[in-house]
Image 1 (cartoon, rainbow, N blue to C red):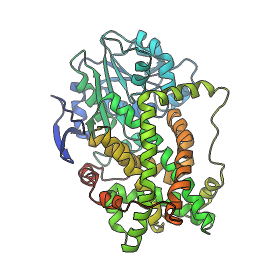
Image 2 (cartoon, one colour):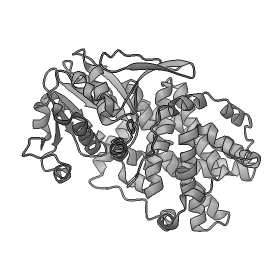
Image 3 (cartoon, rainbow, N blue to C red):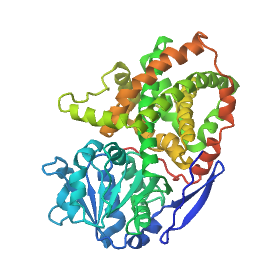
Image 4 (cartoon, one colour):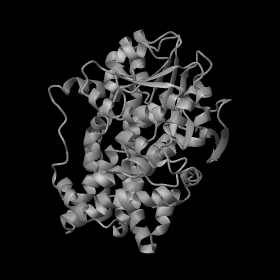
Length: 492
């Protein structure tokens, strides 16, 4: 059963949307709302952004630019961090007291956005909690810490607000679309918000203000537990690990069928991150399907029916590993090993070197829309959607974590720079998850799905495509598309 949530705000305009028969409350963003931010942050004099990893630079700069001189935004970094230079280059300095050592900044701030890595949060949370002022607001952009605390029978301090605002895209997208929003009001990355503790009675307004200040076109509600379950699962499945495994397996398949390296790359990687993602972003999964002619729909259906069971099995396994705490513990243990066994890069494999060449003369307007590739990708994506529906996640979260984040944030970066680039440059938690789970998607697709199509090794369930055509996610995505920014992300 899909959970229904609601909230109260006196600062922003709440509205209701109906997604597949369930009602959800949202707040639309826009630069015309920035003059409401002082009311949203009433009682807050200084906001600390702690960390300069994936989200830190974008959030610190967006908040500073949105708030102007109405509220002080200070960056806190660990003593001796190499990120001090990058923060100074972005305009935060010790001289004007907008940059400092993290624990000193935490102690001096009324609202602390803890954006250090998940492993660092697990290692330092006791020191962070000790440094927080009584009555402060602790902000998170991921629920990983909640999962870690539960594993250790620990909890947040009882005298603070605990809120979350979780942009549905990587930090670079959060900043890039915010800058585009200076010319197109409402351009940005959607965000979810959650209230874990509301001691002051102002937690909801502060969370919504934070999201609006980041430039989110619309903000939807979730819970901190629901967020980390869907986020960790999603990045190990269709958002990163799944798409990584999908294109690795498809590239080899197309090479085995006689395509050149460049052709195989075009029909696998470029096809997913280009025409498939653009079509789904604008017209939804059903819109992509309807673009295909009758013959191509048949091939799409075969691929979809072969891939969906693989995606469903693996996404359920990933979800169970996250919910049990095993995946959180795995990340922490891997983090402890990184000093001795640092992560290598995947971009030296043949297909990624082929991609470097293929992108040099790529004609984006004439890339192939391969129906087999589309069926495989959509089969795995729909399997994640159905997993989240079964687990009771709100439809807004399902749509964003399974579809919108992929097509509007992550895949455009992958298209510009390669999926290997994304796997090698996103958060440590996501990189570890992709390396762990991508080979599972690759193996099961290669060993199970493709032989079912090519050699009839198993009977394909033809009813799956009928279920796909009638799926409620199509209505959900159509509603969400009405709140989509009018511009695509500009990757520079």
